[in-house]
Amino acid sequence: MSISDATDTNPVDRRIKLLSDLTPGAGTCSFAARHQGDRMSLESLYYLTQIIAVGLILVSLGFVGLQLRQSNRLARADMTQRAIDRFIPPMEIMVQDPDLAAHYSRVLRGETPSSDAIKARLNWFFTMMLQAHVGGWTIEQENLVDERTVDARANTIVRMLAAPHFKAEWIRTKRRGTFPLTYTNYVDRLVAQQSKTDTKPETAEPPSPT
Image 1 (tube, rainbow, N blue to C red):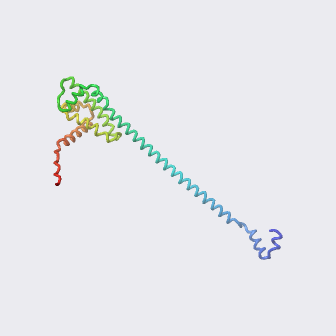
Image 2: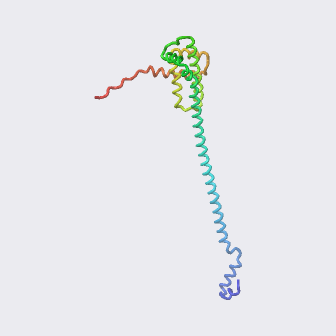
Image 3: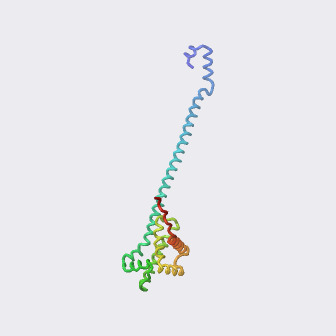
């Protein structure tokens, strides 16, 4: 305290001021308040950074999920194309051999092969078609093929088995155990379902009101 301050105040005020100056801890309240405010600011900043970090992790997981989904679609498309491509080699045989294709068409209509040589070639073609189909069927069991393409391949085999010649060859194929039992049972179910559809009587349409 300066001399001028002491002379300008009365004795009572001078004593109060001296006591306040000599009392330890005076003025610490404002410092504690500032310190508390700083601590709250740091704590809020910490929680904010944690929220941002969690948000970034969720966004990253979302992108990973989208990438996996796209990869699965590409893989299914590739496996579907492979299942379809299995039929290309035997189909090319018919394209390159019009005479055999004509015999194949007549056999599908119920006729018998005209010679043992044609019979052997048709049986060989039939086996190639089954091998192509069982390859695609195996992939289908793992849900790796687009389901929209399954019926087209299955109907090709069912149509062949509707011909007496190929039906007899199918029975001999099952006896030889050329293909897995699960596959042959699957084909037999397809044939049975098709037979029920073919023998189902057509219902007459009700007459239209006049």
